[in-house]
Amino acid sequence: MQQVNLGMIGGGTVGSGVFHALQLNGGLLASRIGVEVRVRKVAVKAFDEPRPYEIPKSSMTTDWQAVVSDPQVDVIAELAGGTAIARTMVLAALKLGKPVVTANKALLSACGEELFAAAREHGTNLYYEASVCGGIPIIKSLREGFVGNRITRLYGIVNGTCNYILTRMKLEGADFEAVLKDAQAQGYAEAEPSLDVDGHDAMHKIGILASLAHGFWVNPKDIYVEGIRSVTQTDIQFANQLGYTIKLLGIIKRDEGQGTKAGARRSSPARVQVSVYPTLVPNGHVLASVNHVFNAVFVRGDIVGDTLFYGRGAGKDATASAVLSDLADAALDLKFGTKHRVPPFVQHERDGAVVPIGDVVSRYFVRLNVMDKPGVLAKISAIFGEAAIGISSVIQPEGHQGATVPLILMLHDAPNGAVTRALKKISGLAVVKGAPVMIRVENFA
Ligand code: HSE
Image (cartoon, rainbow, N blue to C red; front, side, top):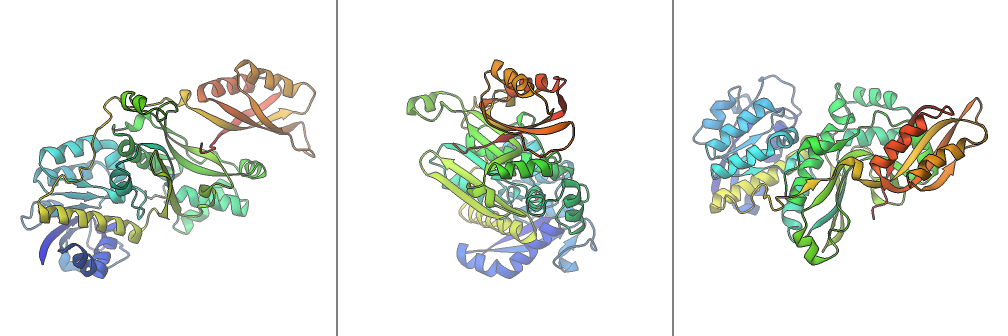
């Protein structure tokens, strides 16, 4: 049987997961694809770094350059993480014409275009299934399964840490800080949680998915991001009363007006909303039931209709599953000499653009803290009325003690910019105390 020699960089959680998965299922993989993937060497930071699965000392080295340049190594798996050094490692391998498999979303988000160009220039390929949603095969699905579809909508719960925290906040009635602390103690959240809870990890993933789906490389700076630190128990409860669950959603929406007429679709450049923010999801929608650390991606194609992907988005085994799938592709491409059978990224929408958040239209949940006296609602609704923003429902719960009461408004579809400006005026009213809370509502139309 033909053999492909793998050089791995990274022997931590993901690296040792891949090593273990190949030990477990390498034979199965070989019998399915007709090529054996054999680990030649694993470059590690330190021989004794903590790792969930053991790697024999004889398989390890601390010299990543020696692994990349080893003439016996046919394919590199970059599982080290980080961006600066990882970029150097990946470029070094690509320059030698060696295919690279990576799980590194932050690297792709920051340097994707450069790395894809290097792969093209050096006649090799870059595979990145493991970079988005761990074990969910969403990259392959978008790139290959839906190759004949225009992707009109993609909604993703793509950060397990945030989903875990929001799920527990809802189920236990606990506050963000308390749940975060406990999640950290149990190993469900990082000691330095900002990459996850401030939405940046989700941004990396959503940017990669948006680029693939719409054929222009999305600059992370153009992605509007809000994390979950400001989601309160009060808002979770009011949202629930109204029939909604708050989820951190990545949203990729092709502009309305594109996608109805075939001719218009061909000629008009893609205008796409690409954002990450806490969202009210109707309790009846399937994404409202995706709980704890699970990820889910809902994709609507103009031909296929609605589809749903669900699974573990992180962890040693789920991520290893995605890396093995990329290794199989790389091994098959090496076997048949088909290096660009599936290019990593094809720019097929040169004039595509991300719609600025101010122009994005959505519905809204607004919570204000107001004085409980006559005329307050009239003042607030007048400001929304002047801005042509419709109110679809109002709740002011009875039985609140004190000078102020919560006032919850659900707003009809309106541009984000108009709502932000109206809320600024409203927060300037003497009868409104504290900063207004605004959370977008998704109806999945
Ligand atoms: N930290 C991420 C999550 C997994 O919580 O989903 C890696 O991207």
